[in-house]
Image 1 (cartoon, helix red, strand yellow):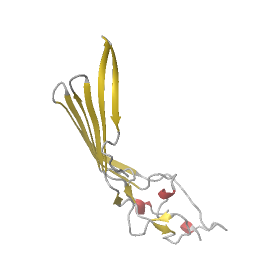
Image 2: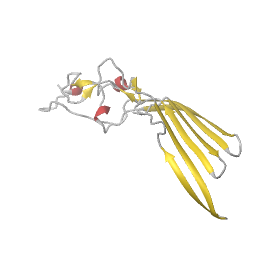
Image 3: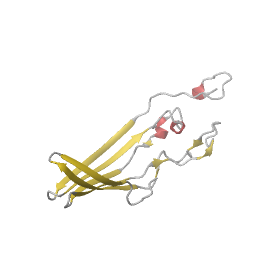
Image 4: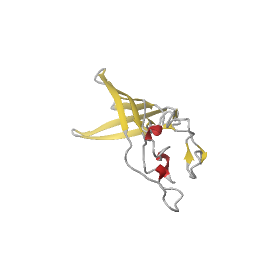
Length: 178
């Protein structure tokens, strides 16, 4: 007999997909805005969250269930789980029409599952599989950090007309993010 004790004739493997997965998200965020003077202000945002699911994207081969009869074996942290997210932006208006601004972002790393070669469970598949005793998305990649900065100079042409010259730098610290 095949899966679930049913005989499917000459077919060796039958792939059944359904949308019975569940996802849960819990989170809280905080915002702090402070204007220190007419020339300097900061905005800061922090989010603490947790995302749990049975599967993340049924269209990808990595989302196939460990056991098609027991989705609880795949219940774990979601691919989209980013435990900590922080961003801050600031603007500093300098004399002579200059303005310096920046955006900083730091966050938790990307979740992933370990996998071994192919057919770890002995079900004649060619995809990489998770070892049986290891949960889904139990490992976390390196955290991310990015700083973007900008220097701008504004020139007045007429009373209601201005022209701006900008220099923007993305990933200003040249930090490697995976």
